[in-house]
Image (cartoon, rainbow, N blue to C red; front, side, top):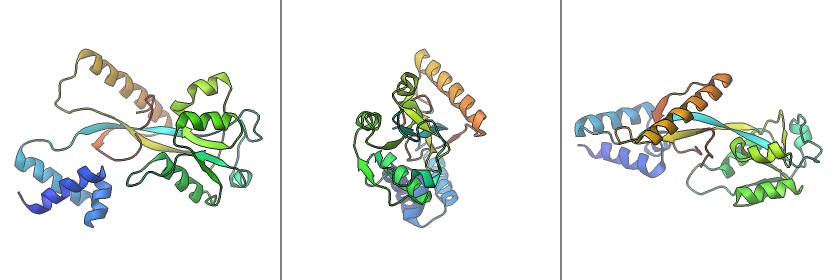
Length: 216
């Protein structure tokens, strides 16, 4: 066992993904994957869990009486709007990072953002008209159904994020756990097929994570 293999494994464990470990070690992601595969072969045991990957839609939401509620809004219509979102967490991808990145990509990086470290509080503030937000679709099903929130469509800020169901590859799963995995995999597959996205196994990543289950 060589020190490079150990260093690679430790970096993945600390940073939560192959891509970040590759950046720290100044190697390509395939090289990192190969290093871990060799280490697993040498030890005769799996070192990392596998997961089912899918996506979670992030919606731009507003109060139902907001001027953009239920309407398409490009960059120009979004200018001057206050956003309500999470602070950017240190050392890992977070919803705060996603909002900042999407605003920058849309040319709205100077937009004011009210930082609130609670999703429930964010939704209540948006309902009260204090601003608009970017939230996981799964977190606002009830509000959209009740009409207390509305979706702003066609925005350059809305996006998707990878989410996953993680379980031990060779661990014991009772009947209830197997049934849950089957239901979530079927729902994720149906949603992704409609979006042209394949569901497949991959190595553990580090971004906000299964559709129909709240992303972390």
